[in-house]
Image (tube, rainbow, N blue to C red; front, side, top):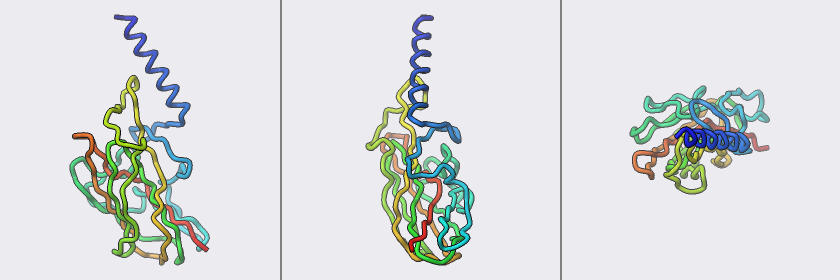
Length: 196
């Protein structure tokens, strides 16, 4: 029996080392693996100094959300069973044309539907991709079992004309493809890159 426990702990240690080599880091009570196009400081806001500055609006810092959002593994996510919700922020960059990217925290149990609006007009919508490329209902957080982390991906929301003070709205929905386990429309914020 002692040898069996040692084997389980040895396997867990090997899995942790392998995960560390894949670039997974602990954050906000969960693990994540960021895609190469997502910046490591995506939650830190920056006001634009000119029309040539990339504007970052953090999901927690700049957006004001309906009461059914919470911190889920480092991302702004819907509370279990709450269905859908919205978050709004005033654009603090200079007026101009910007490419908008949503920093989506993708999950394995569903493809959360989302929509981005400017001043009440929808400009982009879709579904999050699966974090593992397809639905996977057989991953767990225990280190001795297979673990499938969330993955932060930049989703292109198109190029749009923005004016200082415009209201940016994020709408998200839950999706349950694994029984009581689902995807909660987790996201980190938005990037606005000037287009000259």
